[in-house]
Length: 215
Ligand SMILES: Nc1ncnc2c1ncn2[C@@H]1O[C@H](COP(=O)(O)OP(=O)(O)OP(=O)(O)O)[C@@H](O)[C@H]1O
Ligand SMILES: [Mg+2]
Image (cartoon, rainbow, N blue to C red; front, side, top):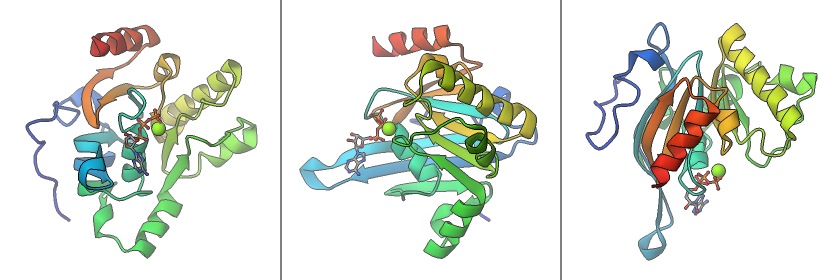
């Protein structure tokens, strides 16, 4: 087992130096160090993630926000083991994904990771909700994007209870400040970097922060 290097100087001090957002036992459900993802090459290369260092504490509900194209889905996919980094390292629990064979990665994904895709029509029926309590981890990309506000609120309430009552870990990408208000912590991405974060977000504080970041 190797330990990750200290945070890169260019990154804001999130959240390893912030006790308020660490799991009680200090365990991270997932983390990335210097995570960089470049799509394409040469003049058309896109740096979707740029040296992101982040920790997702166990038993917490973290939301990732940011403008379209800021790298939210890329970060979620790479931390969940659905896509590989160009450089940098990712861990789920104590397991470094880059050290696994394809087969080991498949087993880890199947046994420990739940993923709700951005384009997936998640129907918040009881069955669907029960199903997503199975994995230890849940990564969700805009899970309320295709739902009306009542169904969306029901799903978000369920996700929050899964964290509070079952000790689940949830990382959710959303554009919606109301949805972000259900999380324990909000991260803000821009141009492939974490530019800010907020503990105990409310929809109003998130809206204010997005406005401030845009200025
Ligand atoms: N498969 C791909 N090939 C090339 N470029 C890609 C690919 N996937 C993403 N990108 C680019 O990487 C950047 C980050 O994309 P990503 O999908 O992570 O953004 P996002 O924050 O999830 O956006 P949205 O809010 O629209 O879902 C964008 O510039 C995007 O065009
Ligand atoms: Mg996306």
